[in-house]
Length: 159
Image (cartoon, rainbow, N blue to C red; front, side, top):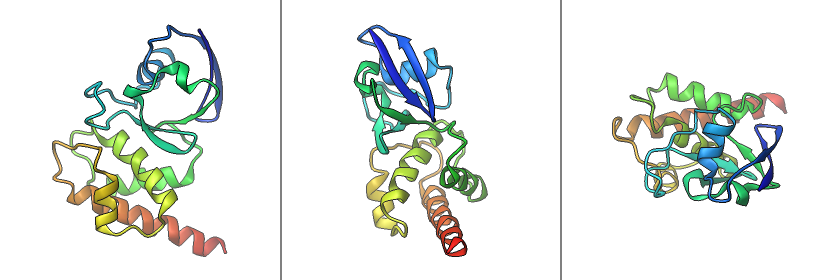
């Protein structure tokens, strides 16, 4: 089947097998390997991307289901908020092995677009579908809070 999918602002027209997962399409067909595949069962969240602005686990979406939709991955360099989240994860040590990080960051982007000043409980609830085996989550929560501060600070300066 032919799919037309916009990924990180770029249009792609590709012939895919109907059973191809979006995660596989992103990694293998587009060579955007920042999206990680950890489980294929929607348990870990490492494959989280944004589809039309909403966080989805790309291991449970078929590429044909994404036809005509817009996908954002960790490689999106045009989103200023995404850059701030990435910076904050580095500054606050929100990553250790880094395997879960792309999914955590993309879920954080979705979360911060919905709630500019998230509480710890809000962050914990929204990260519920993302697993980290290394950091114990404290540094991840701190990273998201710092990113929120950076994003809000820029909005105040811009006004």
